[in-house]
Image (cartoon, rainbow, N blue to C red; front, side):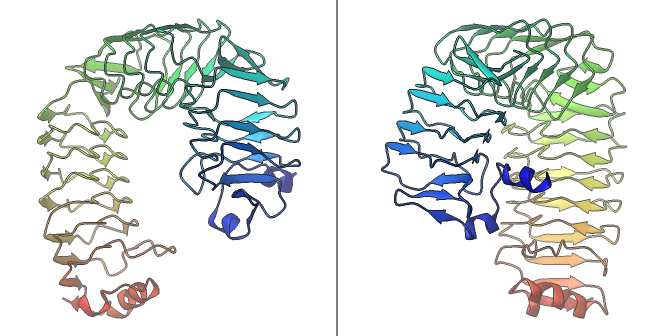
Length: 443
């Protein structure tokens, strides 16, 4: 069973690519020809996937859809069992697609941006199409909306789950009637529905996932029903014109900030601001909470803050200086990515610095205190003004797993390390072919 599950994986690894085979049109397949990876041929308008293929891979090694964007006709084999997320994304020239009877697994939304695909003929007993919307056969899961022209969408009232990116980029939608039985809105489900103005969330909804309504610039109001239990990440990124009416005891709204009810986690800020002051009670800044607020300049943190979440201030390009409280222990991946911070003082309580946490910053000196136990890969990537680094913990974990030393740029003068630790740091740097071995200086 385990081998069968592996053979149906829609993910592609580097090892898969090394062992792959390619047909005369540039179609790339697994070694056993049961998985289709990618169509390399950029001038191919018509393509037939080989008979015997069971999987068309999706989110993949090539960071694009499985097919070229100019493809017009794709014939899928009757052996096909699984299609991966993004497999046909932005294939705008496809007008029709036939899903074979054998198909029983669709991951995420394979058809994002297929705006000219007017007909999906579904022969599979596991799925059905109504009004150009793809559902599971029991009409409980909404997979993909291929209606890119209507301004109002009325979905089936049996739907309990709207899948990942199901309506992504449906630019013409202004209003939508959701199922009264809806329980979960998936990640990025309505992301970039830029003309969506109003949504009434039903009384059985329990969960809204990250980016569910991100970049819905026209969204004016949204209600949080009493049934809502969980909000993941920031579902309302850049919904700066939106007012939240909250009826859930699990959340709290104050001054355009959305918090958990105890105010320990700030989830979202629904107003673009130059200055932010968060609640005294806040211990955690949620993932992507303030990301892409390009005018944000000043942040007053809670004095008991312990965690800054993933991408919390990502691409806040005017945020050049931060003063963090001494309570902070974890700065997660990409927390300040792209902020161009010029003056950085890491708190003495800090333990973990996440992947790409300060990438593209502009500070010239970096002091990493004894409390820091781990620096993840690329934490200070592209910090091209950085000259001197001071590391005080001789046993610090620099995430040695196959990736480069995290200071991957070329301006460093010296890396100061504790006395007696040089052999360890030399070994780490040499294992990654780092050019900085001669820059190590014992303090």
